[in-house]
Length: 142
Image: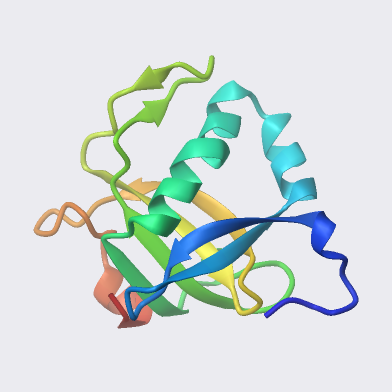
């Protein structure tokens, strides 16, 4: 799952629901977390609270990314976890309600490393799924 050349201490392991319902692990690099932290308390709070929540409580898991903007800069995109978190975070780090008509996506590469996450427009007929998910991903696993 991870490159044997990379020390484990470069990554934080987070519990993640697997498509079969069991718990596994997804990693986030400390470097990525530091970069996000420099963007402000709101984005740091999303990384600390929303990303783990979505990984452990997804409403859907998709496999096979079809959009270039979803792919990581290195390696290959593999899965997308999506869901609606219980809250959002304002720029100052304070909690707010979840964004209306939006879902939260966490992208995981083929090595099990979360490399991107963000809010996106929800499907109007399925508010817990991203818009155009039928054509955006190859298949739905959960």
